[in-house]
Image (cartoon, rainbow, N blue to C red; front, side):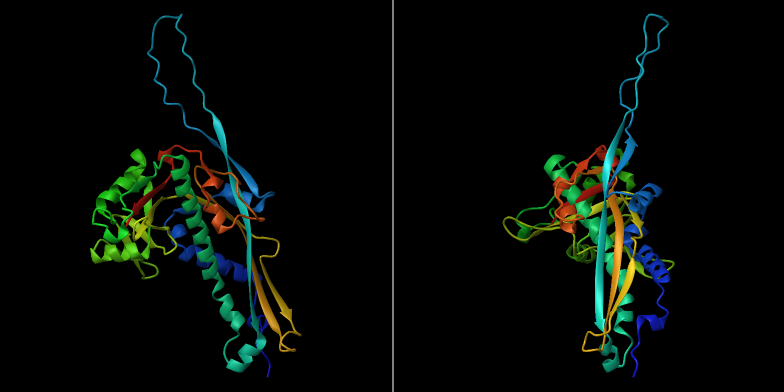
Length: 337
């Protein structure tokens, strides 16, 4: 009895890659909400030379007082100037592989397991993309504590989480204060990421509205006009006395930029016909080349042990430096029990 192979089911690398990209764009809440956006500059840099890339930008004009006009020709105005600065972004090279024995499909009488794997890799990379966005934002949060006077953070939590009151838990007043850390730019925040425990608390108090997506039919949660993303990977900080403290994150449109380029061999399949005592083993390899960069920040490359930063390393405060003024950073953090 013959065994179904990837080559027998019209396995086309180019078509498969397009499916991956379409699927991630459709399912990734960060992209769908506009919090993570791509642009031509990052796309070009993702495909270019070198893993560290410079992003130049113009700084705002100094808020100096205007001149008082005079009819005295001896009084000369001093022209102001505009200055430029730069940020550094980091490209990462990622891969993973999956393997299955051909004998499995023969014994079970089911569809080729490699086909099942291929059907799930888009969701896998979607999760990896979201995780890198989340860990990048965690690095920004920790950098703000370490060097930014916590001016992006509203903390209403208690270290005695087991005895937290309504004043310490997610509430409207604290949410408004977190948004207000944006100053005059508070209308730029559009996405709220919360932990499942926080979602449960909010649903018990009927704080969540659900709106049906016109395309998918799925119910999308909203809170005070902000789309809600539920994320169990958000920071949970143990209280020094008891219980836990949760970090909810507010994102603005375009606060995370990303670029994606195809490596030399983005998808590869390998066959070992002698493995399994001749039954055969198939391996699927996928490779990614991404730039994920928060707007207004510089990547310092302070702590990178391998060829590309790990998710743990992008979450380190030491690897980030804020370059924009606080009001131009479209992120805010709300810490609560």
